[in-house]
Length: 61
Image 1 (cartoon, rainbow, N blue to C red):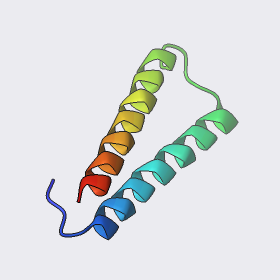
Image 2 (tube, rainbow, N blue to C red):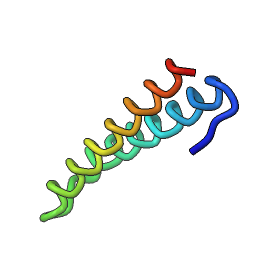
Image 3 (cartoon, one colour):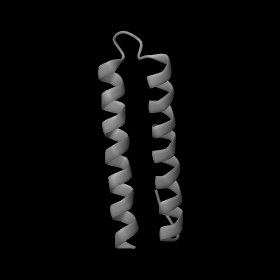
């Protein structure tokens, strides 16, 4: 992923993070389907890693 400036990186980070927060809130309201807990935890951790990576990219540029 190539960004022209840090504002673009920040925008992507905010969109990804807000999407994950929205998904987590919806799942809390509806409940987690049986057998999906592990997959959702892995997804949450992956999104967290992505957000951290994009933040580091932003700081470097």
